[in-house]
Length: 443
Image (cartoon, rainbow, N blue to C red; front, side):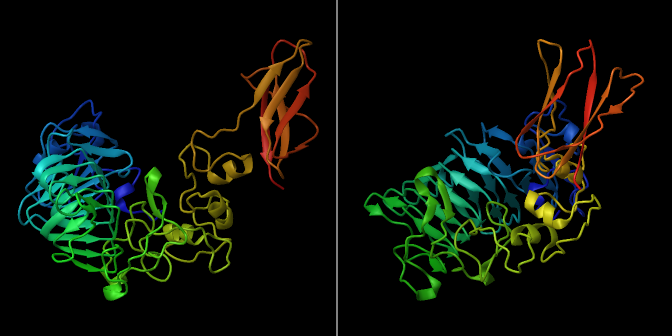
């Protein structure tokens, strides 16, 4: 399965070639340094940072990591969540900065929600220079009593800045600040600007960021801006736009691009860093990269092969054979694509039933909780009503046995053609005990 390492579902100590892996799990019951396995994972990110050495990768499991002091990084490491910012939150509790990187630090921070950080400068993230890279993160509701509620200096890639505040600059500030494919919305900068001041912005969107004098998204005098969207810019100069970006549901907090957005394919491919957007979708889809933290995604099949283009890109990096069966599970790629399953894994959801078997049975190939269930209702006259969810085009054959050890399965001499509705089979047997099983096949 072609996925970015940031969102691997199963990780081991050898997950990163050429470096050691250190693990963090908020619910670890046996934290033992150097925290080299999930079984001995640290319970705090700082503890993992303290034992790591330059080049190590720190994997952080899901959780709400509430801080009593800032996380200080004085070595070059990668700090990466397992499952992304929606389920991995670092919270300054309105009292402390969340992350701080020292000078010359080449660290990477990927896949977190960073929130409620508080400090004079850089409430969410403070970088002594522009070297640290913060990618695929959501910086929300951080505050600074001077400037840069969200982030000071450093390079932000595919990040969403929302609701950050500062006395002078709300979201991002610093001469060594770089923002690439970021979205800045609803940040407030007091007497300055709500979005960004100083540094460089490329492929970014700024909207509804405010100062005490009204909407003020960026500082034009101190910020180098290209291929970005903000009302203060000069339309058409350096690839910039002044149009409304047309988010899907800004009132509901959805800042993905609507299908009519002028920001679609309006970015500069040469500025792109990383291969995935904030939703872990491919960073360039279509003619050229989009502006902002999210690529516009629409299901499409441009080559007419019956396979969704995005599905092909994720699993094959390009076009695939619709009749191929790379994982040998018996299910062709055309059906794997329609089901959203992984064509390189015979059992996508790791529930013990291979994808072909689930497809025939009509259960979900991607949800381990989706099961084929058979309900038996004993009627007053002792007969049994056997009920299950049918699937159109499938044939069902019942077998029964009056004992299990040893079982003596007998088949009823007929099959039932299914439909996409519940099916009821009536067995007139009214004895004390009978066991049933169902075979399902597709002709």
